[in-house]
Image (cartoon, rainbow, N blue to C red):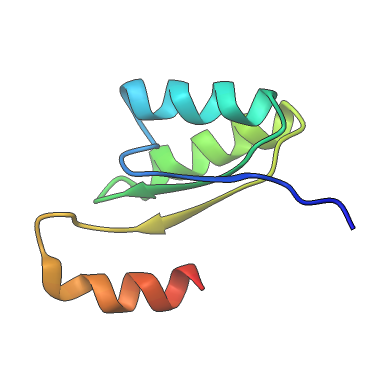
Length: 77
């Protein structure tokens, strides 16, 4: 059984987070990225990662609303 690394990148749908997600995916790391409100940008990032041969998923997360963390953790599992 081969073990693959998984990176969780908050804010991975835009800017520096997106660039980090893409670079890690190109190196064979599976990526879970979060977004706050722009699901369209998250979907585009996922598509770009998959087009480069990577595996990725996107989950909504507002890091400023700690009451949402339990639901996020449940979705992450």
